[in-house]
Length: 275
Length: 275
DNA sequence: CGCAACATTGAGGGCCCTCAAGAGGTGTGG
DNA sequence: CCACACCTCTTGAGGGCCCTCAATGTTGCG
Image 1 (cartoon, rainbow over the protein chains, first blue to last red):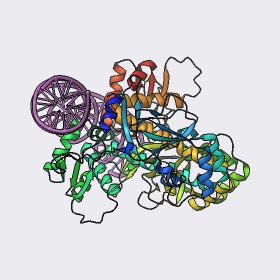
Image 2: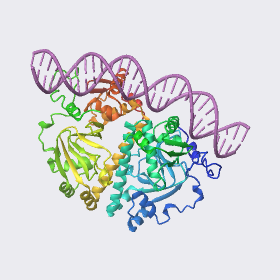
Image 3: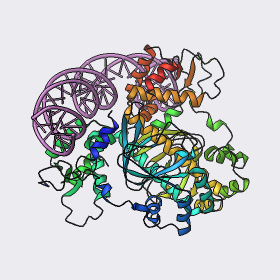
Image 4: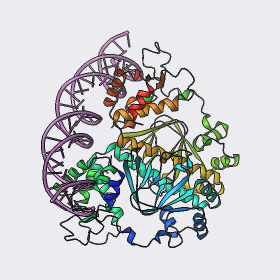
């Protein structure tokens, strides 16, 4: 249980870190920073096509569909710390994050926030709750300045009627969420902390270093979030994560330098991950 | 880890139990039984309308949509123990259970099966994987003789194009699954065994005794599955579940008689469940 | 420099799993 | 009909994993 201010502050710890001395000996924290320095054109630059293909699938949407989505979308720029989705009021819109970082979790009345999952860049915040006529199951908190896009459910429903391809993509989006959540539940039920962390690391390896060109010996994973947030995602305490890092490092599976992890033994990690 | 035969056998333990002596002193196991005694007309009796409204929502589907679904649906009667969905091969169909009981979980090569969730009656087995072009995240095992319905993804996609209302219902179905899984993940991450069991009991109270007419003092919950399966759903061992039952019973929150649980203190249970 | 937050490390303890034994019930074969 | 195998549930003893609490080191900031 921690205050929102703390979580935000953590993201701005190192706005000018790469300028400092050692890039090896000291933790190189490739946090998401310096965002304000860039112009705000964002994903909407190309008329929004980039945003929609990022969240609705790669085969580009028809221009008229993009235009229609653009018509019904409400776009808002919100500061870090904003509550983007609240489980206390009925979900009337589909919501997605066009730009910035956010955490899904549970917000308490006292202002604390328990993160369960973290999101970045263009990604859905909640594509499902609006269809159920109830409240979202999770809250969403902006960890950086963000651009929030909301799609009224009723308007979206009309669009689905008109553009069957859009409906198919929404189905795929939700199916992917079901898949991800099913795997997450499975891990929580059957794997211990070590296994879950190994699986987490492996996923970071594959999704992050897509250009797996260079000698695949030591894969380097940069931790984009605070370790306590990683721990929260794995449902363990920061202390346990710290011990796990040391433990795996002692076994020679990984090499930890601050916020940079070099994976030395992929098969070994896979064995720990269970399957 | 247990053999499939054991799980099946467990369901037929008491085919003629209600005829026996004491309904109070002895465990009254209202298991799903005597199914073979009933005629096999099943949910498809009324032209399938019952089935589809059960899995796709209450406002009845248009007759032509029902007919179209019926056209593309493959219906199979399978014996207990059949593997209904396999995570070892790509999902080409949406699959649902028209009749019977099944468990979702993980099947190992040695024939053992780790259940994670149990389903009964008309219910979706897997409405999502087919859209992803990959393998299902879970296996499904028939616990009783079942009627399996599969819908080829391609044919389904054509139907979604023709009938937008059908697309909307599929979206709602998937959204509901996302909601359920999100809550399950939350419980696993933040609640201990006692809290998860309390939450499970409360859900059984509300979904089961829909006709909450009679004096709401002692709510009676009948355990439809083996306790070891309940334990598996809660990600605890049968031993722990047994101890939990005794513990809650000693506290006066519930009263346990075999497979019948009387809930004596709903507010107390709610407090244990956390929220 | 002092403060605040994060990460790390150690000590202690609680929750829950593992292992083992026993009771009760059911189906099977002698 | 009874012995036997087999399953389930229960109960106890022991132990491991991970949490909690506390102290310390490090880094960034006013």
